Amino acid sequence: MSTPSESPAAAGAPPSERDRFRSVYAATYPDLLRFVTRRVHPSHAEDVVADVFLVAWRRVADLPAELDNQRAWLFGMARRTLLNQYRSDRRHEALAVRIAEHQPSSAGVDPELIAARLDLARVWPSLSTADQEAIALTAWDGLDGPAAAAVLGITPVAYRLRLSRARRSLRRLLDLPHTSAAHGAALPEGNPS
Image (tube, helix red, strand yellow):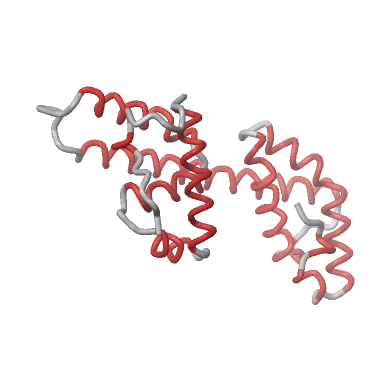
């Protein structure tokens, strides 16, 4: 994570705001990270803390004067950020359920395909949101690499890399070797470009 002094926005801020933010950041970062880490997976904690400090930077004038009040303000912001993330996760899960409900009936469907879909449904929530999005744009939405990259605002090369990593994560979660084609219908391997 970059420090406040590395932020491009910090360079244009008045010295008093910049110094105040640096002081708040240095005094509260470890406590805020511990607070967030107790509530989310450690791999997501720094992202949440970064989001909180981004809000704090944008609203530095709203920060309370005393350290204890600053900590409380930041903890409240972290709590609201986590609640928003939780609601977003629940919406994604509800969408996955609705998508699954609209799948064709299982009459005449290969039992291995059904097992693959169940395995995918089981591990899908374990993937990061970025991995879910990379896979869904290609596998569910039918977009090719350049179109999916445009949706995400990244280059096609960056999208192919992200998709490759997402597929690797999914394979790891499913305990499938790279060469297995048993569940190929659940995750197309074609060139995304």
